[in-house]
Each structure stands twice: as C-alpha cells, then as structure tokens.
Amino acid sequence: MKTDKRIMAIFGDNKFPSRTSKLADIEYKRSLNNIVQFLQETNPDRVYIIPDNETTIIAALCCHKLRIKSILISPFPGFFKALNKRCKSLLMVATENTDNFILLSEGVGDEDAALASIKESVEFAVNTSNAVAYLRNKKTDKGFEDFIEKTATDDEKMYFDLSYNSREVFAK
Image (cartoon, rainbow, N blue to C red; front, side, top):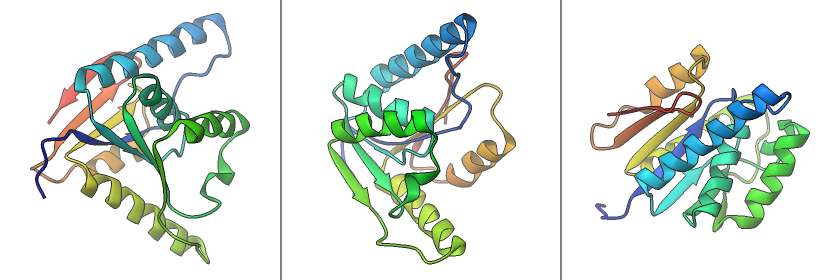
C-alpha cells in the first residue's frame, strides 16, 4: 500500500546524555535540539515509537512539541516495568500526549515469548512506515549497531541514522 504520507518508525539507543553536571546538561540540550531539528527537517506526518529508553521517550515528547502525530507501541503489558524512575516519569507525560497507544500482545508467559513480542513490535513499526530513523550517540554500543543492520533491509524505505550528540545524519 503506497502513500504520500511520511510515516516514520523511530528507534533509539540507550546512551542519551544525562543531566548530572553543567557540562552534561549542555550535551543533553544539544542532543535534544538535534533531535528536534531532525524532526523538523524530515517533517513526518506520523511516527511509530516503542518507548523503551530515554532516547525514544524524548523523541515522543519532541513529536508532541512539534505537533507530529505519534503512536506509541508496547509489545506486551508490563513492558515498561524495567524503565528507571526518570524514564517512567517522562513516559507518563509522553503517554498523556500521544495520539494513539498500541498494545501488541495481551501477555507473555516467559522470556522467549517476551522477546518474540518485542521482535513483532519492531517489525510492526518498520513495516507500517516508509522511513526509519535511528537516533544514537556517536559512541553507541555494538548491540544497537547490530539492531540497525538487522532492521535496515528494505530497499524501498528511507533510513536515517542521526548521531544526536554530533548532529551527523546519514541517509540511505
């Protein structure tokens, strides 16, 4: 199904700068501004986000600020229990301001089922979108790089790789 709308899935690493010092606060604000600028430039009509870490939760809040329709995806009930207190607080605000919330699975019985549900959620977000954005620290970990490699496989889609703390954007 082809559409003229710009529908984007957004994923992020877990390395978003903290606000623990004045220098860290400057990097936090720069990274936040780079995400806002990226969203303004790409101007998606709708985004799908699995808010599983601070980077993706902040992206959802930026979408709200920019009046970009956002749809948050939870792979299963209880998915957000592992988030730290700050992320849970930000998620609460993001959830109140989202346009829609999708719970993909009614429940999972074990770790294998949970991982399968997470994989299904990622596939849903990617398959429903015509563009995918990866928001990451320039010093991201190998796990997130592997995630990008596994999910950036459809030649029909546009892929964006934003290093939010250096403002480097690569498009494929």
